[in-house]
Image (tube, rainbow, N blue to C red; front, side, top):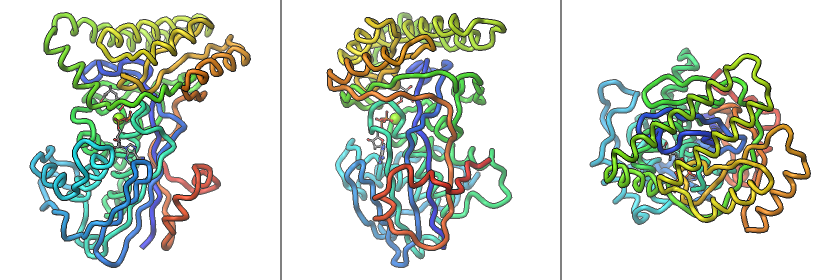
Length: 396
Ligand SMILES: Nc1ncnc2c1ncn2[C@@H]1O[C@H](COP(=O)(O)OP(=O)(O)O)[C@@H](O)[C@H]1O
Ligand SMILES: C[C@@](O)(CCOP(=O)(O)O)CC(=O)O
Ligand SMILES: [Mg+2]
């Protein structure tokens, strides 16, 4: 049996986080930071799981994990099975609401549906490591979910030869959304969609994504405040505010929707000077942050990023669920290298972690290797190893 490496990117939400959960439009792009997974069969009917980023190494006996009978629409996901989730939480037995347990339950939920008799008879090892910070707003959960979905679909032969690239990615996207549901509760689907398909897009729940050409040329500084937070908690807090004051919150969500619409207008205006485009983009960044702060998802550390960057004339907003995690700062073309260096220095002096990035790279990919590979070797190599001259298939 071959081994499969899979890889999928994190994402950055430029406009529209939280509002997107309520059916509003959001704008997002894939990041250069990615997660990588390795899956390969065993011979002893066990599932070996190694997730070093959440400190989990554990082996389960195949017979201990229930498998679902085939359902209508197989292999596309059936509606979420809450009873199965509860059952898996007990079997996995890693506590509730911990990073490790959510990751393991999401994996087992997909395993339960996708594992064929042939693979169940052998067992498999599954391992993930990521270059993304976990729980910082860059979509590590979605990137992890896409790796799980791609690996299990491929291992079990569901990404059949002859299935076209779009259909394959659609299947991966649907299953990674299920895994995101296990981790987040009520995700919009934007993170797994961007991680699966890559690129820079406008996203609205239930609609086809719309590519945004031109975004690849934008430069951003990402600042991880290192203040931990969980997406699930931030999303639930916004929900409480919305339930309490719907007439106040709904217009705010509508306003956020219009930010993505205005952004799209900016990029489609013929002849608009780039300097003007970037200035206006920065103004939208500012407005979006203000609305998110009003929804209660900012944090003193995120306000600190805004204070420091605005002193040097730069616009920042929180990105992802907020409450800590990462902020995004637009680097206009006229901003000098020295200015960027000063901002970074000031932010890092606060204990934050900065990186420059652009958005819109490739989505999920698979690399098929012949014969077994050592997981230890896999885990000891950094990202570069996987990108050196290897024939990744991005389903295209
Ligand atoms: N590399 C990884 N290995 C295992 N689980 C991961 C990994 N990255 C993310 N996760 C899962 O995703 C959760 C974090 O998701 P979330 O709170 O949505 O933050 P983020 O903004 O990073 O997506 C973790 O608790 C864990 O369950
Ligand atoms: C807040 C939200 O819009 C994005 C969450 O992103 P992250 O998990 O913080 O990377 C939630 C969602 O869209 O499901
Ligand atoms: Mg997430």
